[in-house]
Length: 415
Image 1 (cartoon, one colour):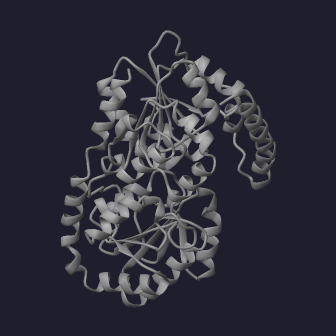
Image 2 (tube, helix red, strand yellow; image 1 turned 120 degrees about the vertical axis):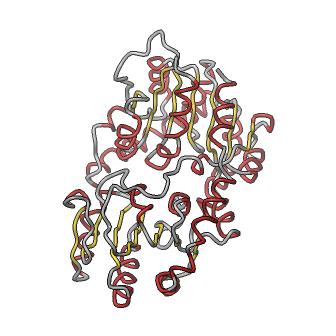
Image 3 (cartoon, helix red, strand yellow; image 1 turned 90 degrees about the vertical axis):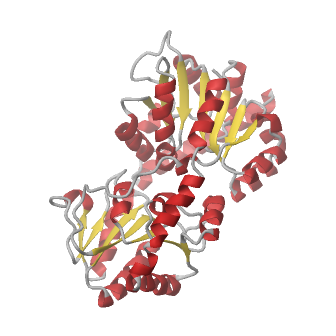
């Protein structure tokens, strides 16, 4: 960006920060990591080391690259990995999953003087952004410092595409700083080309989320002989739908249990209040004794990183952010476990994945609460008819794996 654009961008960004930080206090979302975004303080010095700087915004992006980072560590044992995140939940899951693999920090705020300080302290030889994170000042500063930039597991959503097109003159300038784009699909590649990315820099590597999956048979928890409905990554309004359906299903299937995992753990108390208002017993996952599920007690997950261990135990799975709040959450994990998985009508954040799953008939997409109840009831009542779903789903997943290895090849070429 030229001087005037940079100055204007910094002014706007600074004003947003002035509004943003007091807002965190008012909403009760303040955490110490907010201030760590103003100045880089690595847990240990990286001076004299070969450093690769990875970036993942939040929980979903961190989990997506766990397998990638573990495999890269075997290929590049002499390199130091630094992982930056934006959210507190992302930081927590990174510390749980990757603390022995990476130095974990909060990402810099995208102001010129802040990103320069981060680059000076980290001194990376490569910057790896997960999905499509575009920060004008950071990318510009990395480019000036001759640090190659690669975007991995890249995707351009409908909303992002419209936004980037509206400032095409700026988008083209930023994308020119990137050395390689590893994208999920041909559509993502086409959109990048329209936005001004060099076609020679684009590689359709696939979605690494197909590679980073758990196998069936977790065995960490005791479900007993009852059946289990897991509602994962739910948003406000969706718990009401799930609870209504659960109560109706229990009239016919009395052994059915329910686990609700809100997408944001700060909503746990409000979800528990809603459950009590329905005259149902409820317990937090962290308070369960012996990890044993009881017949008539709804479990609310209040810990990050648990949900993926529950999918293998489920008989039915509902994925949130697909009814009241559109876009969808990761439905690949429960499908890979061979579980009958249900989503609402709004899954545009996973358009390519949904196209694959719907064409293979390995997922259930419903229009409303009535259809969700009807299809869940049908699956529970004719469960034997859906046993072949597991094998078919696993075959489809295997067919679309390999993105991690293709991405590693692109990363190593830039070192």
